[in-house]
Image (cartoon, rainbow, N blue to C red; front, top):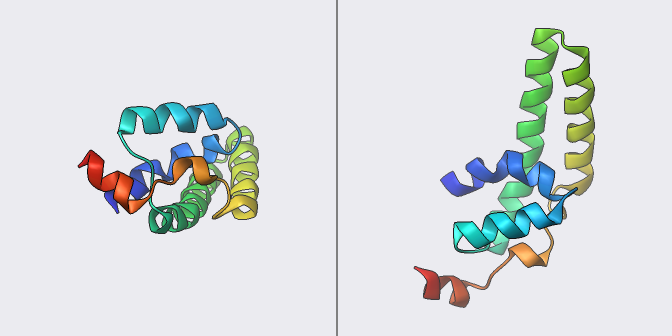
Length: 97
């Protein structure tokens, strides 16, 4: 689960720039399981909500606009922003451990 939390914010970028996702997982050494992807979709929504709250507290209109857009995008994409290219089977993951 720590990996999922660490990936929540980068996942927001992956929906717009899939090559970043591919590079990340190449360096990470494995893709995510389907269960991890499910949690990651929801964690991305929470991360973007947290960013919006922080921007509001700072009264930074540019950051508010960006965080609001990220939140809208993450709620639209939750659970689907990461396509099957990020999923590996449990059998394949066992070979990496």
